[in-house]
Image 1 (cartoon, one colour):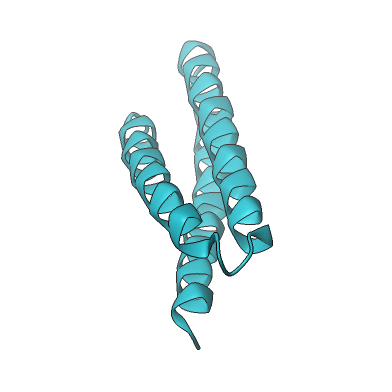
Image 2 (cartoon, rainbow, N blue to C red):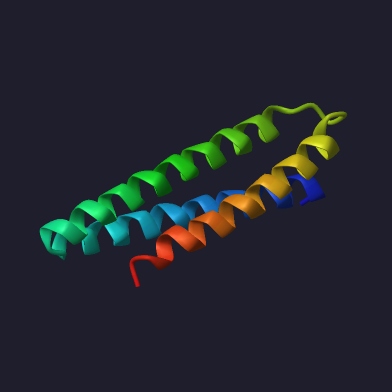
Length: 95
């Protein structure tokens, strides 16, 4: 597996983990009281939007040419790190 494929696989793994976590958080939100459930739903909606943004970045990276790959990787890596930090912060409100 080359560097590009390994990088893309790492991003796909992150997305898969986020999807599982969204499902778990959704289950927990359903069991919460009304006020808490509403706040959790807002957080879940935010997490879904962040996940969708990450998916778009991954799709763009996969569609990039070999020549543009390095520039795309650098930008995607920075953005993915920021998304991961925001994800951790938002999901921590469920704990």
